[in-house]
Amino acid sequence: MIENANAPELQIALQQHLRETQGQVARLERIFSALGVEAKTKDNDILDEMMSAAKDSVSNIEASPLRDAALIVNGNQVEHYEIALYGSLAAFARNLALQEAAGLLDESLNEEKKADAKLTQIGETVMNPRAARTQTA
Image 1 (cartoon, one colour):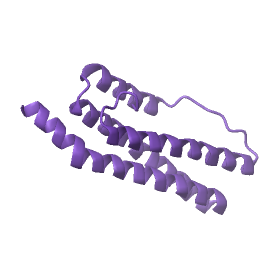
Image 2 (cartoon, rainbow, N blue to C red; image 1 turned 180 degrees about the horizontal axis):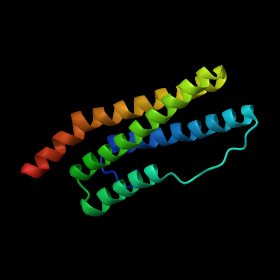
Image 3 (cartoon, one colour; image 1 turned 135 degrees about the vertical axis):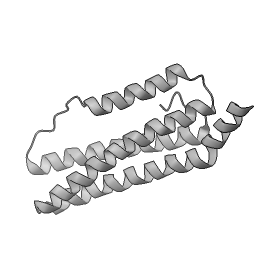
Image 4 (cartoon, rainbow, N blue to C red; image 1 turned 45 degrees about the vertical axis):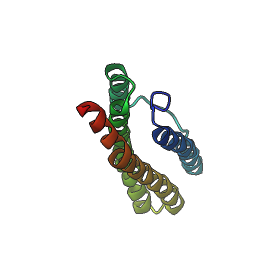
């Protein structure tokens, strides 16, 4: 998504969130290690479908503010999914009295909420108006 975004504001927001995502992976690894469980990756059909939708946006919309607006929609979808997951995992951790894990998951949850809000803000104040102008021109 970063390489296919045209607007600098969107590229910067996506790059920042990529760095946060790397920190989230480290937090998850820390949680697994503290629990004595091996961290394994698995395919995730839901995320795969969301990434396929983003690829479709890139393939089907020429580089333009409209494509950037579509990428924001795709990004918001992923953020909402991650918010649901991190929120649920943090709640489970609290119920299991795993306070450190809950705190780490809450950190990731807060980053996802901020990323979602940032994408929404860019969409509403920058990309959607630009896209609308280019579509009506």
